[in-house]
Image (cartoon, rainbow, N blue to C red; front, side, top):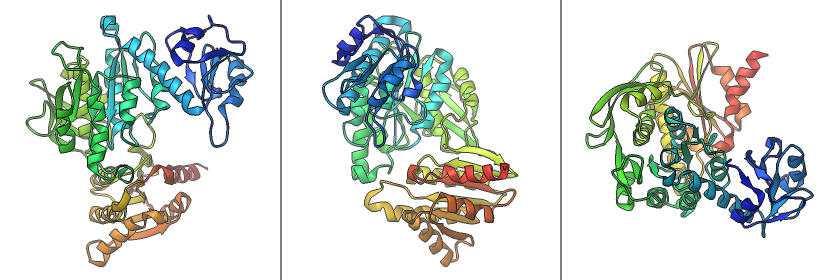
Length: 482
């Protein structure tokens, strides 16, 4: 974090110094919520939890070198006390992050000003965030969240990792309701906003896609007015192939850059080729120039993610050749997202972090491409938060799995039963000759898979986070290593 004294942090966060806190003590280390991560100069943020209360670890964090703790009740350590419970601590954290983001992103800093990029969408946020961060890191020190650190706690913590040398701040913003993204944009006002898609994720919470689009569009509404001056003014990077995203052009004062596969997209892909490895290649069109891109990431859907990254990188001053080179070198960063592992002659695709209908379709399409001349196996669990359409959505995924021609479909958990129903219906109609297996959990899925897998298989594992399907791959590879 940028160096600030405790009295200045108290002013920013609307807190009072307490315990043995000295006003002139400097915080210049990390801001953490886990006392085990405390280091010299750190600020420890004490939050309550289901099992532990962070206040109980305030003294431990200070013993490890933290300058003070941000708390909602007095503790036996130097602290900054806010009036209220956990919610007020989170609000204070947001105020501190907002101060840092606005200071670093101040246009008056000229070329030293940090460029803030916000990314949202129903699927692909984390992968695209990782892509953008890897590409634009070539232009200067870049901060991006680890994994999906994209909520009211993870977002400000990511911002607070930045310092005076930070040139790019690439942030993923998520929504569980109307107003969530607007709040995150208040914490760290983006100059560039990237909207990937409007899908079915969290349909149960929002009700319909129009409500989801309303929430996602808060990102482009938060952008500053566009200008022609490079590096200044707001830019909305929108997926031209998604009608709801494209329509967000009318909701922003920023300059609009469209990406996609259509001829009217400012940044587009042609000649897409999904090779035997499942990693797509395509011709990138940008600013009247073209370059061939060979991605290292697996899945045809990665083309759109790469186009979004290319559009953002171009706005940050990179040329097409530099972008194409960086995209080709970018690899997977966050765990369990199309993570490919070769094991004893089999190819495992671990995409177990989360699932919705769009990402399930992308995963099964990738499986079909990878298993073109091999045997495909799918281990799938349920898709959470789909609302009234949940049963039909699961059945459609089962039908698609059957259409893909998987030899074995292992369906994990009672809530995923519709997937098995869809595949079994295809079998009954004579459209599929594979096997459907229903199991209760990840451990049983690993056992069922072990009984059926063989060298040469391509095995994809995907489901909602609560199913913890990453255990399936871990159990098999760890058992074989013993």
